Length: 148
View 1: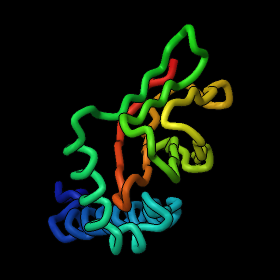
View 2: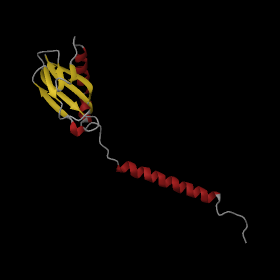
View 3: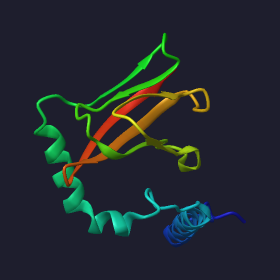
View 4: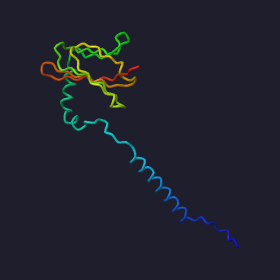
């Protein structure tokens, strides 16, 4: 004889809800543990130690009467680099790919004016870091580029 009572009661509903919640949390935990975790910068500790020097190099660049120039031109076939100081030494251009560090490129330049070929670089967003020395001072200019 059926008494009209349901098999579902508040205890069973609570147990099923807690069980579903635990399974959901275990799924999230498994998902996060299986993700590849790479630091955004491979040498973040060393960069942190040199941060004050980098800030001073940026200040030195901003104090120049003319700012460095990084331009992509269709007629030149590359990236035109111009530093306002003709006596600049140890000139280094770093082209950094934010979404794929394996594509990063570092180029040493011999002159305060140069054209860097871009045929090896993938289209998209790049960070260009131009560093040089002049008169015992360090300089740093950073600019984001969008390559077609």
